[in-house]
Image 1 (cartoon, rainbow, N blue to C red):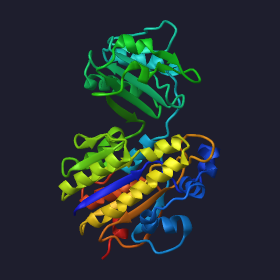
Image 2: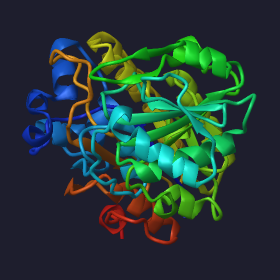
Image 3: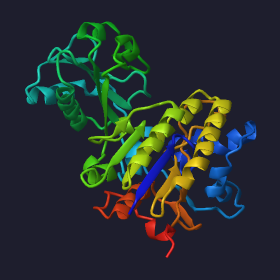
Length: 395
């Protein structure tokens, strides 16, 4: 055993999934990589030779194992996608607004001996212990997320998480996000409450001064069993690094580096990789997704080229037992007329000295990656997924 790197190019889809019409019919024309390269000259020879050549053009002999994965989670979501990658099969959520569920949430919190009040007479917003606000997430699609926002000068983040955990048990939304910072106040949070879309009421988080130094956040997904995810099963046995957005969306105890800039993400990975002879590295390049949201094909193409150049220099550093998996979590086609994620197959490109050039086909779930990681480190299997380790290693 050596080291495994899972490098997630956030939103790097390679074509609409066959069930796209059941989720978002507009996604059926999506193909993030294909449409970018048709619009912008792009050179990514390293990834192309690792399997994109076969996956998108059915040509050439890849230098490593290759395949693609279906999204088993509902829709196309970065948070849920990463839960799936590390071995979960998130349940299908429902859309709920606070106006529909605030009474049930209030009842459950009162039952747990929290103080619950309504700071606005006619709005479905809860104030808990004069320090925490439960409201709609007005930055997301209506009904997807409920926020639990804390003034961390009044309560600890761990205390806020207790409130978040109660809310999570009550509602079946995609996510409950517990967040907070020490540079705001309850008065300021309440002063920036505003109406969102379709009956949402929530906090304008940027105006509230939440973000910045010592800001804390925890995403709680619906139907996500963190205890059976790879990083949780592995952390007591090996170093598990979470670099980039994985530091925010995957739970863990140590070695988390929340970085957005692509060059800094890759530099942190290289530095951490050089320190360890044995360990796992769960890495997310977030800026590709930001370029997709911005509908900016030039920026997206430049980021892919930046990663590809870096991979060319990094791959020779892999030792005999090391494995590199390059993949994605969904699509985000910047050419189809909207800025949302797209439900697309994700590529699987696997390389390392012992990895043979073989097709691993279309995987039923991205959770196969988490299962493969557990198999590699010989630890308890993840909740979901089928390992492809034996398919890719040379005899």
